[in-house]
Image 1: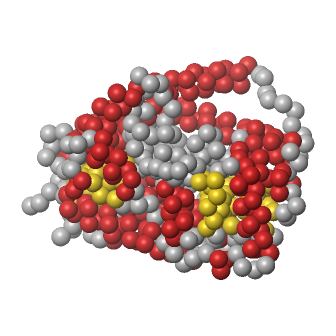
Image 2: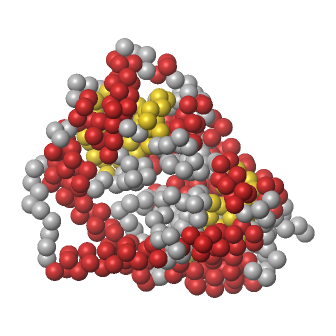
Image 3: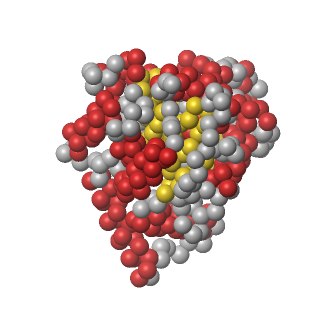
Length: 464
């Protein structure tokens, strides 16, 4: 595919038959997202690949040609792929590539509008014909998204299956791993491994049928359950990031024995956090990095709290996506001068920003089965966390409380305002850091998780 430039070790469809080092085992990773894609699941498997190579695994990756996007795209991560890893890239599908380009244009347009809002120079949205057509197509696509099971990335599966089956014919693999989300990777891996005799291990960053982040009509629920049941019954091993998801799967699907389910949390790059200097920020600063999810990890209670604490000389810094509506809220409510928008940053810049904060802002997940991966990065940054508890089952809030790494308050405007005042008071009298155990959570380093995934894959790899 023209326009995709990668180092030699990350080339498209390799046809060579690599020899296996003495004592090494070979794994094929099937994942829709891999660097330069940079969302937490992509970075998770980049780290696992690095750890497996260090432990004498031969690793090959089956993924897609990556369309550059304004969100979750970091070319610097490609350089972290170990030289011995072969990355096979296939067509993501014609619709997907077009949609990614349109999303990039929209994110860039939103950023321009946001900059105009902050300088009082916004003249309203564009209404030219091309913009209207693009908006109409985008709305049509978004309306169809909830109708497609398991998800709209399904169009890469035919290319992935053809390539994966060819790889299994050409050389011996000891285990195949598929990583979600998106969940289309499990569809591809199920077809690739069927009848091959190669063990299949599936990694779930989130549950599928009970995923509160997937908006879908009610009629899809039984369809999605059948998909999930079929994957879990066919997998030789299952990896999940939290104990609560393991219990959910084993309760929901009785044929899934607890012995086949392995809990490997997300992690944080301890060596990176130790090496990078803080981006020292002036005054009392609250930093949030990553995505906001209206209704699920809703930022509006926080935003509504900001005008209530004008007496506190705070500055809120955010790195990640930001819609013009949020920026207009700051402007309308007189707190735009207290907000600094950094846009999308690379991993190293995010680490520096987190380490330079007075405190870090985190919003938990509803439902009790999902832990935001960035929370572990926050723990790695060793800064106090202002943790907003989303519901009684919020396991992120429970983790912060158990590790004593931050202050937990309800995701409620008044509670957040009081939390900001409390954190500022401690910061002002110089006791903020000493009130928390900022050295806790070393068991969540990536090095520890890499050791665990090596043990799990060796336990399921075929013998002889």
